[in-house]
Image 1 (cartoon, rainbow, N blue to C red):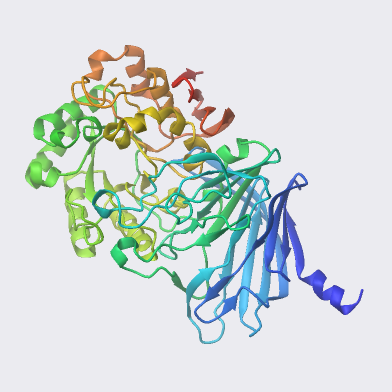
Image 2: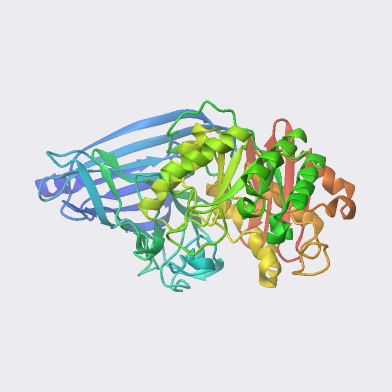
Length: 587
């Protein structure tokens, strides 16, 4: 072999899954990778690399060394779709240098259906930090691939200029050539059907204070690229380019591949590649919650209505009540202490609502300016701990910049110091957070149940949307949808407002299909008399965490059937978009 061929051979590598069916080919001569599954191309040559403030790692790279090793790890989850995970994969690290001799690594982990990859940047000389100006990272799909995507919205639009908040509609079986609704690409996770050859789910994980949240660009010649947040997000506060100290790594980008949808629904890629960021001395309890606001809305923020929903929670054997926005003005801190004491006397614990801030949007719902300020936040959390509050719901976040990701982490960490669980709404996609943060218990990041109250279109599309989430949004992270509506009309008194189009069995089945460790359930006191006893008994006993999840059948936007195990009991659930009907079987 001549010297040219030797150099080319050294620039081409590959890594396969333990079962040999999934393969990543790496071509460092062209700084690209491709993905093959069962001999079929799922991703064609796709770009790798990034441009830093001090170096270009997108061209003229030379492979100086490589290493491979097996991964065989067992870990536990206590708030997800599975409780025990055995992660087996093959790891490859390509060590490269650019034309100026600056070091750079590309790391891949390949399990039987999942790929995770990231970039590692060593400390090289006196440079101790990096600012990532852009990424070349992309995903090039074969011609004929169809898409199941939701768009990244404009910044600073929507309710009180609070978007983007991952609350846009999906298009299914769309063409790659179709442009996104706002022209900013698509939010993770992203599902693709590669003709008859199989399915691919793209997402990212391990994003905390170390990086910004990313999304995909619109498609250009079959390729979707990683995009950073828009400058306008967070009302213009913070940079769009992430930065971290060296040595350091970017987050993991994940690719889940399957001939069928089963590996997509059952994937654990979001958690396989992250670790807990801090320990906890607290034992957090998961479960169900009553919630007055979702049906009775703002007018329910008064003493009598909150007592009624505490009594409802007690009657239904729910662990919690969520007391939503405006409690500080309508009830006040002293009355809240009395209300928490009343709830605890009924065996019910309390979650309290907060706005995430105020300076990057126009939100008037209160409390505001508590969670974004470390001094105010710690004082507030100490007060909550002193009266026995068990969790907070923090709403109206400002986008995906690293500044905001840092605030998420600060809120989670401070809350754990005071034994508080955290739900986030109006927010970004959780990216491995169930394993990273021991007190994180769910996120909205979906067009959720409040929209059923706000407009009939959401009710008309409810069955279609519900048949999407198990394949896309909910497969990579907990999803705090806040549904299971038993009212026929979505208002107090059940006589006016939007009209539910789904059956009672459909709504009950969503408690199995939608996974979140704290389920805020949209029932009202009227339902104790108007709903079948069997339905109420089901809600009194349904679990919110699972030991095992198994996909049975379905197609995104059409139907889904899956079963979940809690302890020794299996719950099988089915949703049908065409009929708006469903079922639950327990065995």
